[in-house]
Image 1 (cartoon, rainbow, N blue to C red):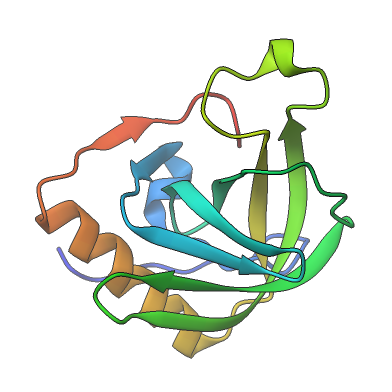
Image 2 (cartoon, rainbow, N blue to C red; image 1 turned 90 degrees about the vertical axis):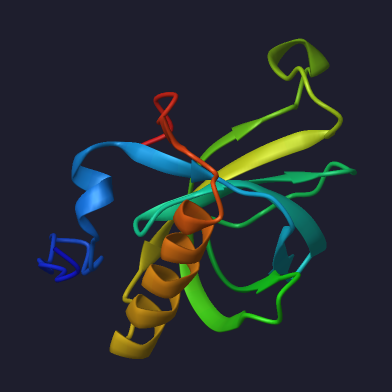
Length: 137
């Protein structure tokens, strides 16, 4: 039951089974450390995540970021690709953030896959339920 089956897509993204189910784990106390600063992670899966920023920034299509949680987990040097962005005209966003960004993970190493699996499993066992993905991926 705890075994993960990996497969590669044309974009070289290694995926977890939860991507196939289009489920994201709603995150609490997770930070996205980006070249533009720090954002709060809203939800996460083995395929990607979304995060909010207090200020509007321009993000390139691909960049390197880290994930940091309140319990000391620090997943470093994740290559990501921007999939969607909201907040350019404040009517398309209803939260405390100026903007929200959704990214997919690219070219994960085996260590990063393991770290993300551990992180999402910790979130699941902490009582946070997986929620249906709101069409982000």
